[in-house]
Length: 273
Image (tube, rainbow, N blue to C red; front, top):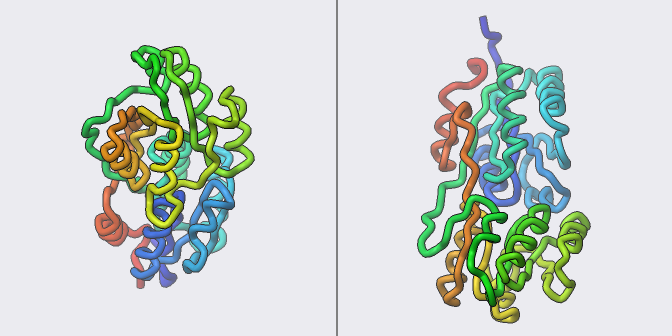
Protein backbone atom coordinates (compact mmCIF):
# COMPACT_ATOMS: atom_id res chain seq x y z
CA UNK A 1 0.00 0.00 0.00
CA UNK A 2 1.27 3.48 -0.87
CA UNK A 3 2.28 5.74 1.97
CA UNK A 4 0.23 8.88 2.36
CA UNK A 5 2.16 12.06 1.55
CA UNK A 6 1.59 15.45 3.13
CA UNK A 7 4.50 17.23 1.47
CA UNK A 8 4.28 19.51 -1.54
CA UNK A 9 4.52 17.73 -4.88
CA UNK A 10 8.01 17.67 -6.39
CA UNK A 11 9.20 17.57 -10.03
CA UNK A 12 12.72 17.06 -11.33
CA UNK A 13 13.00 18.97 -14.62
CA UNK A 14 15.85 18.44 -17.06
CA UNK A 15 15.93 21.24 -19.59
CA UNK A 16 17.85 24.04 -21.24
CA UNK A 17 17.20 27.73 -21.66
CA UNK A 18 14.32 27.47 -24.13
CA UNK A 19 11.23 26.02 -22.49
CA UNK A 20 12.78 25.38 -19.08
CA UNK A 21 12.17 28.72 -17.34
CA UNK A 22 8.61 28.86 -18.72
CA UNK A 23 7.91 25.35 -17.41
CA UNK A 24 9.36 26.19 -13.99
CA UNK A 25 7.23 29.31 -13.67
CA UNK A 26 4.08 27.38 -14.62
CA UNK A 27 4.85 24.52 -12.24
CA UNK A 28 5.62 26.80 -9.29
CA UNK A 29 2.41 28.74 -9.95
CA UNK A 30 0.52 25.42 -9.64
CA UNK A 31 2.14 24.68 -6.28
CA UNK A 32 4.88 22.28 -7.38
CA UNK A 33 8.36 22.16 -5.88
CA UNK A 34 10.83 22.09 -8.76
CA UNK A 35 14.42 20.91 -8.97
CA UNK A 36 16.22 21.63 -12.24
CA UNK A 37 19.23 20.11 -14.02
CA UNK A 38 21.04 22.01 -16.79
CA UNK A 39 24.23 21.27 -18.69
CA UNK A 40 26.19 24.49 -18.20
CA UNK A 41 26.62 27.46 -15.89
CA UNK A 42 25.48 29.79 -18.67
CA UNK A 43 22.22 27.82 -18.98
CA UNK A 44 21.72 28.07 -15.23
CA UNK A 45 21.63 31.85 -15.55
CA UNK A 46 18.27 31.62 -17.35
CA UNK A 47 16.69 30.43 -14.08
CA UNK A 48 17.81 33.38 -11.96
CA UNK A 49 14.96 34.72 -9.84
CA UNK A 50 12.84 31.58 -10.12
CA UNK A 51 11.79 29.71 -6.99
CA UNK A 52 13.70 26.41 -7.21
CA UNK A 53 14.37 23.67 -4.70
CA UNK A 54 17.68 22.80 -6.37
CA UNK A 55 19.58 23.89 -9.48
CA UNK A 56 22.16 21.32 -10.59
CA UNK A 57 24.71 22.12 -13.28
CA UNK A 58 26.78 19.72 -15.34
CA UNK A 59 26.53 16.23 -16.88
CA UNK A 60 24.72 13.48 -15.00
CA UNK A 61 27.19 10.66 -15.68
CA UNK A 62 24.82 8.29 -17.44
CA UNK A 63 22.27 5.90 -15.99
CA UNK A 64 24.21 5.41 -12.77
CA UNK A 65 24.38 9.16 -12.17
CA UNK A 66 20.65 9.54 -12.71
CA UNK A 67 19.93 6.64 -10.36
CA UNK A 68 22.10 8.37 -7.77
CA UNK A 69 20.01 11.55 -7.99
CA UNK A 70 16.77 9.58 -7.69
CA UNK A 71 18.08 7.59 -4.74
CA UNK A 72 19.31 10.70 -2.93
CA UNK A 73 15.96 12.43 -3.50
CA UNK A 74 14.13 9.46 -1.98
CA UNK A 75 16.33 9.68 1.11
CA UNK A 76 15.99 13.46 1.43
CA UNK A 77 12.32 14.11 0.70
CA UNK A 78 10.49 10.90 -0.31
CA UNK A 79 11.61 11.28 -3.93
CA UNK A 80 10.16 12.99 -6.98
CA UNK A 81 6.55 12.64 -8.01
CA UNK A 82 7.62 13.07 -11.62
CA UNK A 83 10.72 13.47 -13.73
CA UNK A 84 10.19 15.68 -16.79
CA UNK A 85 12.60 15.37 -19.71
CA UNK A 86 12.53 18.70 -21.54
CA UNK A 87 16.04 18.38 -22.97
CA UNK A 88 16.93 19.30 -26.54
CA UNK A 89 15.28 17.03 -29.17
CA UNK A 90 18.77 16.04 -30.39
CA UNK A 91 20.04 15.16 -26.89
CA UNK A 92 19.32 11.49 -27.55
CA UNK A 93 21.75 10.03 -25.03
CA UNK A 94 20.41 11.83 -21.97
CA UNK A 95 16.82 10.97 -22.95
CA UNK A 96 17.75 7.31 -23.40
CA UNK A 97 19.60 7.26 -20.07
CA UNK A 98 16.63 8.86 -18.33
CA UNK A 99 14.24 6.27 -19.75
CA UNK A 100 16.44 3.39 -18.59
CA UNK A 101 17.09 4.83 -15.13
CA UNK A 102 13.47 5.78 -14.43
CA UNK A 103 12.25 2.38 -15.60
CA UNK A 104 14.72 0.65 -13.27
CA UNK A 105 13.74 2.93 -10.37
CA UNK A 106 9.97 2.73 -11.08
CA UNK A 107 10.04 6.52 -11.38
CA UNK A 108 7.24 8.23 -13.36
CA UNK A 109 8.74 10.01 -16.39
CA UNK A 110 7.28 12.36 -18.99
CA UNK A 111 8.84 13.84 -22.10
CA UNK A 112 8.07 17.50 -22.92
CA UNK A 113 8.47 17.52 -26.69
CA UNK A 114 8.74 20.68 -28.75
CA UNK A 115 6.12 20.75 -31.53
CA UNK A 116 7.52 19.94 -34.97
CA UNK A 117 7.70 22.94 -37.28
CA UNK A 118 6.50 22.59 -40.87
CA UNK A 119 9.42 22.30 -43.29
CA UNK A 120 8.03 24.96 -45.65
CA UNK A 121 10.60 25.60 -48.38
CA UNK A 122 13.40 23.95 -46.40
CA UNK A 123 15.21 20.80 -47.56
CA UNK A 124 15.30 17.94 -45.05
CA UNK A 125 18.42 15.77 -44.68
CA UNK A 126 19.15 12.88 -42.35
CA UNK A 127 22.47 14.22 -41.06
CA UNK A 128 25.07 16.85 -41.91
CA UNK A 129 27.06 14.13 -43.73
CA UNK A 130 24.31 14.15 -46.39
CA UNK A 131 25.50 17.60 -47.49
CA UNK A 132 28.39 15.89 -49.28
CA UNK A 133 25.89 14.44 -51.80
CA UNK A 134 24.31 17.80 -52.65
CA UNK A 135 25.24 20.22 -55.42
CA UNK A 136 26.72 23.11 -53.44
CA UNK A 137 29.43 24.43 -55.73
CA UNK A 138 29.69 28.19 -55.15
CA UNK A 139 27.30 28.15 -52.19
CA UNK A 140 28.10 30.08 -49.02
CA UNK A 141 26.69 28.07 -46.11
CA UNK A 142 26.13 29.29 -42.57
CA UNK A 143 26.27 26.46 -40.06
CA UNK A 144 23.88 27.13 -37.17
CA UNK A 145 24.63 23.89 -35.35
CA UNK A 146 26.04 22.81 -32.04
CA UNK A 147 29.83 23.14 -32.17
CA UNK A 148 30.35 19.44 -31.41
CA UNK A 149 28.72 18.59 -34.75
CA UNK A 150 30.52 21.27 -36.73
CA UNK A 151 33.50 19.21 -37.89
CA UNK A 152 31.44 16.65 -39.83
CA UNK A 153 29.23 19.36 -41.32
CA UNK A 154 32.19 21.46 -42.49
CA UNK A 155 33.88 18.47 -44.15
CA UNK A 156 30.70 17.39 -45.93
CA UNK A 157 29.83 20.89 -47.19
CA UNK A 158 33.37 21.49 -48.45
CA UNK A 159 33.32 18.14 -50.23
CA UNK A 160 30.22 19.37 -52.08
CA UNK A 161 32.01 22.59 -53.09
CA UNK A 162 30.60 25.09 -50.58
CA UNK A 163 32.33 27.85 -48.65
CA UNK A 164 31.48 27.42 -44.98
CA UNK A 165 30.86 29.88 -42.15
CA UNK A 166 29.57 29.26 -38.64
CA UNK A 167 28.20 30.96 -35.58
CA UNK A 168 29.20 29.35 -32.28
CA UNK A 169 28.43 29.94 -28.63
CA UNK A 170 30.85 31.98 -26.47
CA UNK A 171 32.18 29.08 -24.41
CA UNK A 172 35.64 27.47 -24.29
CA UNK A 173 34.26 24.11 -25.42
CA UNK A 174 32.45 25.61 -28.41
CA UNK A 175 35.53 27.54 -29.47
CA UNK A 176 37.71 24.42 -29.26
CA UNK A 177 35.35 22.44 -31.46
CA UNK A 178 34.95 25.33 -33.92
CA UNK A 179 38.69 25.81 -34.36
CA UNK A 180 39.21 22.05 -34.66
CA UNK A 181 36.70 21.97 -37.54
CA UNK A 182 39.25 23.69 -39.78
CA UNK A 183 37.31 26.89 -40.34
CA UNK A 184 39.44 30.05 -40.49
CA UNK A 185 38.83 32.52 -37.69
CA UNK A 186 37.33 35.11 -40.05
CA UNK A 187 34.63 32.55 -40.96
CA UNK A 188 33.53 32.24 -37.33
CA UNK A 189 31.17 34.44 -35.32
CA UNK A 190 31.15 33.94 -31.57
CA UNK A 191 27.68 35.04 -30.49
CA UNK A 192 24.89 34.04 -28.18
CA UNK A 193 21.71 33.29 -30.17
CA UNK A 194 18.70 35.60 -30.06
CA UNK A 195 20.64 38.62 -28.81
CA UNK A 196 20.13 42.21 -29.94
CA UNK A 197 17.25 44.64 -29.74
CA UNK A 198 15.04 42.20 -31.64
CA UNK A 199 15.26 38.43 -32.10
CA UNK A 200 17.22 37.59 -35.22
CA UNK A 201 19.00 40.92 -35.53
CA UNK A 202 22.51 39.45 -35.16
CA UNK A 203 21.73 36.35 -37.23
CA UNK A 204 20.32 38.47 -40.07
CA UNK A 205 23.37 40.73 -39.98
CA UNK A 206 25.72 37.74 -40.19
CA UNK A 207 23.92 36.42 -43.27
CA UNK A 208 24.25 39.80 -44.99
CA UNK A 209 27.87 40.36 -43.96
CA UNK A 210 29.04 36.99 -45.30
CA UNK A 211 26.69 36.99 -48.35
CA UNK A 212 25.24 33.70 -47.16
CA UNK A 213 23.20 31.74 -49.71
CA UNK A 214 21.91 28.95 -47.43
CA UNK A 215 21.69 28.05 -43.74
CA UNK A 216 22.11 24.62 -42.15
CA UNK A 217 20.36 24.04 -38.81
CA UNK A 218 18.68 21.25 -36.90
CA UNK A 219 14.96 20.48 -36.97
CA UNK A 220 14.76 21.18 -33.27
CA UNK A 221 11.55 23.19 -33.16
CA UNK A 222 11.20 26.17 -30.84
CA UNK A 223 12.20 29.77 -31.37
CA UNK A 224 15.60 29.10 -32.94
CA UNK A 225 14.29 27.01 -35.83
CA UNK A 226 11.40 29.44 -36.31
CA UNK A 227 13.92 32.25 -36.52
CA UNK A 228 15.93 30.60 -39.30
CA UNK A 229 12.78 29.92 -41.29
CA UNK A 230 11.91 33.61 -41.00
CA UNK A 231 15.39 34.91 -41.92
CA UNK A 232 15.69 32.59 -44.89
CA UNK A 233 12.29 33.69 -46.21
CA UNK A 234 13.13 37.37 -45.76
CA UNK A 235 16.55 37.17 -47.41
CA UNK A 236 15.71 34.57 -50.06
CA UNK A 237 18.15 32.00 -48.65
CA UNK A 238 18.07 28.24 -48.85
CA UNK A 239 17.53 26.28 -45.63
CA UNK A 240 18.82 22.79 -44.91
CA UNK A 241 17.21 21.08 -41.90
CA UNK A 242 18.82 18.08 -40.22
CA UNK A 243 15.87 15.86 -39.36
CA UNK A 244 14.92 15.36 -35.73
CA UNK A 245 15.65 11.95 -34.19
CA UNK A 246 12.66 9.72 -33.56
CA UNK A 247 11.45 10.01 -29.93
CA UNK A 248 11.53 7.06 -27.58
CA UNK A 249 8.14 5.36 -27.91
CA UNK A 250 8.39 3.98 -24.36
CA UNK A 251 8.06 7.47 -22.83
CA UNK A 252 4.81 9.42 -22.89
CA UNK A 253 5.30 12.74 -24.68
CA UNK A 254 3.46 16.00 -24.00
CA UNK A 255 3.51 18.97 -26.37
CA UNK A 256 2.18 21.96 -24.43
CA UNK A 257 2.55 23.50 -20.98
CA UNK A 258 -1.18 23.19 -20.28
CA UNK A 259 -1.23 19.50 -21.24
CA UNK A 260 1.84 18.86 -19.11
CA UNK A 261 0.30 20.46 -16.03
CA UNK A 262 -2.89 18.46 -16.52
CA UNK A 263 -0.99 15.19 -16.93
CA UNK A 264 1.20 15.77 -13.88
CA UNK A 265 -1.88 16.29 -11.75
CA UNK A 266 -3.67 13.11 -12.80
CA UNK A 267 -1.26 10.47 -11.55
CA UNK A 268 0.96 11.59 -8.64
CA UNK A 269 3.39 9.08 -7.16
CA UNK A 270 1.36 8.88 -3.95
CA UNK A 271 -1.95 10.45 -2.88
CA UNK A 272 -1.74 13.78 -1.10
CA UNK A 273 -3.51 14.10 2.28
